[in-house]
Length: 563
Image 1 (cartoon, rainbow, N blue to C red):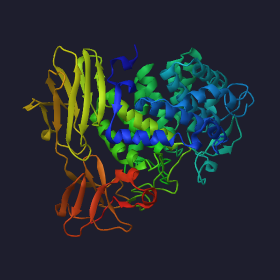
Image 2 (image 1 turned 135 degrees about the vertical axis):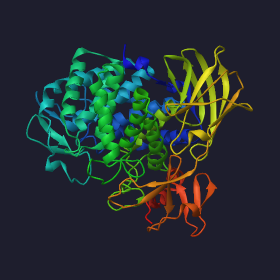
Image 3 (image 1 turned 60 degrees about the vertical axis):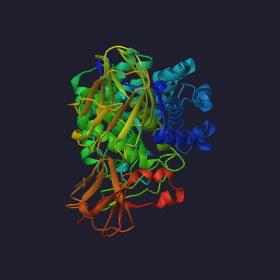
Image 4 (image 1 turned 45 degrees about the horizontal axis):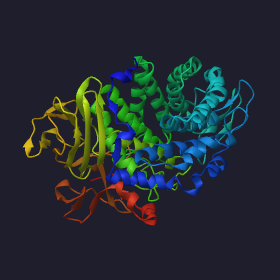
């Protein structure tokens, strides 16, 4: 049995009906991915089609497939992509050049990662045999022949891969890898698509390829290579999937935990986004931010350590929300906290429709899935690691529980769960995460007007109660202002930032201002504070999505303060 059979399990997308802000974000993204540049014709001729064949098309299929399920919609573009896939392919069933035996191109292999992911998710949703045939074509004719080549992947930094004007370019190389990517490590993020393809259609040959890739990846020093963080985090998600679903050897989990911690320590911005490469804080990228959010939750599934969920809250409510643009797409920011930059503000690539706008769909749809978790060993146990609004059907081993959640989080600490259906039987055991910046002692959980006894277990406040239709479980906790040390003190000695629960706060100013005294800050509601002495307003950074585009492009919030 795979390790996953004993782990906490998230809600299926079919059992989640997001509402409120999360639904609004999904709707915006779903609409954006139906614009002209995401059509089949546009995707196969896009400017990335030569550098990363299959990437734009695959990311679009993945994004629309996940958005559609989260919103309980259909998108004709998904079926069209699968139906017309052969039009995009060469005679061997993949996109791009057919290289001589024993030769390969990193971006071509890496570009098909998104295609595999999109085809796998579509197949799991629709069970369309054409999608399965496409997966097999890519695996058999593009991926499997690369297995003997991984030992020749460079284990040292090549100057020709550094300092390019944009990311994702192919640089000619002498050797079995005819082209290498300036997104260093792109080859290994294919572990994401390959491991999911294995779960869809397992073969011994594919297993051997995956194990070869993981072994080679473990030998590489991602810091010395200045690896791209998106490539790194996507590869780690693939290895973690392999650990959870196929082979639970401890060294696989160790690789993921150690390298994710390296990312958090050395390549995470002040606003919980990413440096695009290790050691190069040039800009952020929503794709890596989505990966970091997913990894945080999945590592909690495996370890039950609340630290990972706390980080996931900060990633979602700051980085993901700030990177979604008013048109529903996702883009890039400057690397707040590095290069002397105290501000949260958008980079020149305000939107990245070639990659980030599609991957944003995976982050938002995962948020919908993460509404509730169950444990195979806990018949009536339910875990609530997030507080998104919406309806969720919990299918626990001991029965079905249907809830509708409404609330104020992350701006306020009130959430109500109305019971729509509850299987009769023993009491339900409900676990509510203590969010970052919240004291567990402030938690009050009531059923109706009755306060329930609580206990604290592994970062969750736990209650036991019988539930019936129309019952209301009310959760309330205090969110207070916290002033903390900034992440990179070498850039800003003794600098601080302000948090309201998981929310990073910023002052809307184009020039740096001194840090206001905490005692001078009056709470205005909705996570906003104002200095009584100077009238400076501190506001959550997450609202850029709902501004007019011209305002959003130029919005600048100071998030790092010095005395």
